[in-house]
Length: 307
Image (cartoon, rainbow, N blue to C red; front, side, top):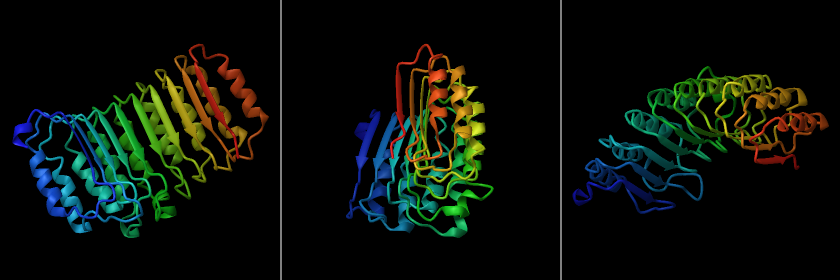
């Protein structure tokens, strides 16, 4: 690849690929190190079923970590590990990303992560939180943890986990776009409020998406923290909140959040999803109607209360 030293973007897919071994990825990593102008990197390791057939576990992260070494100009990284990564890999990936201080856009897909050793269950998210604290140039962040199996109470009740991730988010004061997907992570989640409160520091945020569909939220007071944070996000243009299947949510939980929209004078798009939330009543819709009328820039509204 020495002839391609001016290359600025690379995209590689290894979806459901059984023939690639660790040695091949390590050699690829060594080749990429000469691409000092590389700004965009996209890798897709998605598996059809849970598991990892590309390379053996002990070889895998040694190979992947090599991909980032020396790439000091990287601004955008997209990594898709759907159904093929466990907690240990999350920890290793976080460590590898920590040195990329020029990153502006980061997308990590850990949907359907495989089961991992409970003794290290909270470490992955803790290290990811620590990594985010170093990536202060980030302007766009997307994290997908949809349908993590093997997490359960052990992770979410810990003093680490989402609390550490929240601490990492607080440091990202340059963020313009944030998308967090924790749908189908049950039971969810004792630190929901801690995570929401971290959003308060992101006062340049223009786009926010939170997906906790079917998360069985157990700390409804977190909605108070979410409403407090929204009041500080005066630059917000687009907001999308997904809580379908969280059947403990009541009118009293949502009304402070909806009230918080009043301060978002530049809001253009609102998407709210509360399907299957049987405790909600007409009072929520009435409150929405009152608040939405005050938003002069509002162009699009999507409300989903379907079963």
